[in-house]
Length: 385
Image (tube, rainbow, N blue to C red; front, side):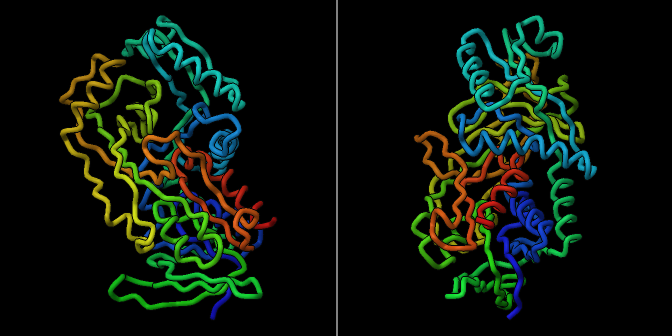
């Protein structure tokens, strides 16, 4: 049986960042990815926003790692020629939204975000004339990144450091022996033609995103008692034909389950609205790892476009409904039910579950992309004790 220093399950942006972090620290790392390439799940199905850290409760992991990760991500994107742009964003509102905007401002300052600026109607119009709002918060440190460019750079660093991504590789079982070594069995290849392989490793990281809970049930030991129930929330996007009359990202005040129907710009100049929140509900934790992506219908129902138009016309009344068309969608792994407050990231290490050399990540949704490099540092800390 072959031996490596460590195994990471999941080659999304989080798994790649963790594997890179450990490989650069001198570890021999293999990433098991159930799909035929990296980042086909949540990582490639989001708006690519680099968040500033405005919305998350003070002291939460989301707040801490978003603020830390944003700076790390900008530095990394610049040094590795990752396509990105520091566009800034406006969080907009009408007069009745002032209290909600003030709450965002206070939360942002508590999180260490000091560059927010309050804008009145005239100042908003000077920046974005197409908007029809009474006030806004300007966040100059918000930006966008090309997620595929980022993942390619992370994997490049990993392979340059001697690591590798093993695609079409699905974890079947993992068990820790008396010596502390992990034995991991995986299926390799297309499902109907797969063969089984075994590896031993000093440490194991579950960064499987949508399937993190399913992978966790295949890892034997007391950590299983801490596996949270996972819920899927689909976010649909509408694409705007032609160019948008905005040079910044435009967000309304948040709504339950998400940040409201906002406008994002991609690095190619296109504009999208979304995501909305389509609650898919609780998922079976005993499903096969790697099965979630194929089971999800990612199509965007055209009937949702009328609601998109209504939401957006509150702050951009000049939007022509005929310019909207179904875009793409993504699914967030949530670890709190719809009626409950949003949950923080859940990262469980040996001090939590008692199994040395095991770190598991659950509920890694937004701002996971922004926080990926900070999360990778935190996982390394967990592994090193």
